[in-house]
Image (cartoon, rainbow, N blue to C red; front, side):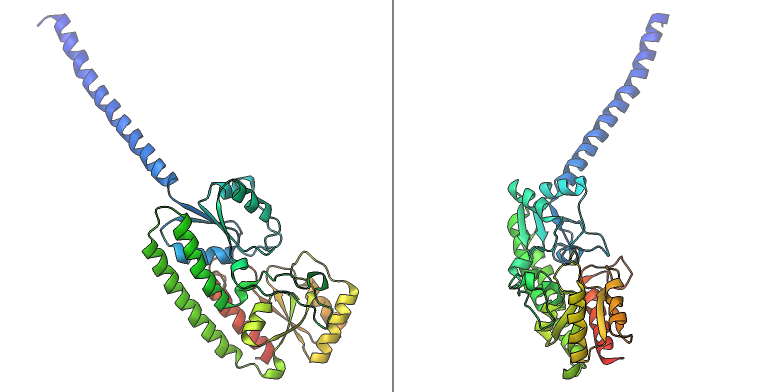
Length: 325
């Protein structure tokens, strides 16, 4: 064999592995691109509050990606969005939000997503909303007749919303399996019915003359309506934590508490207790402040990391706080 022929064969032998490697790399690149496309094509649902986020995840399961904007222990009245989160809203297949003015710093982004063609669902508006009313303590006069956004404190209303969210997902989110969504929603609705029954039995332990609620702001109107309580006032006489009490507000509240014989105030865990502590000074001490998780879920493992656990924890705390247990 000539030297030239030997070199030709050597070059050919070297070229074949190179071609094989190049082909494999092309195949891997194509597979990666396909995988990315598949991931990007997964349907996306964005939920504003973490309470509704938990419920939506129970309904959706693995059928779609569910992104929750509000972090654990955040205040729904004041939390805001990053630029990335705002963009996620406008790229979603469906946006689920509370509405009725709750997410005060987020609603403009929801409106922008709707204007760009994204389907949106306001859960609170579909939950037979109650309205704020002026109590004898000089309650939220500026909100007289305005809808109360805190519908989730009534598990029966949340059960209705569960079915409506399922309807929205099936209608607007492509590629989900309707049968799976319905089965998930029905299973969770049964858990909500069980929760409602358990709460009623728990609250039945509270005597009729002790069924009066004072909170850090007006948040339990729906619970009171469902289970037979009277909301006699709030430290912040408003449906939002962004308001502030005046000295006359506090004076009216303490007078209402003295008249009703109430010495327990329920304060949301996401808010400082300073305002509730003021009542101890106003009433000469002896006021008990009980912490609840009324507007936000906690971090995982912190006692109220799902809607069901939050409602059970709050019910237990309220019963103990009102009965002195």
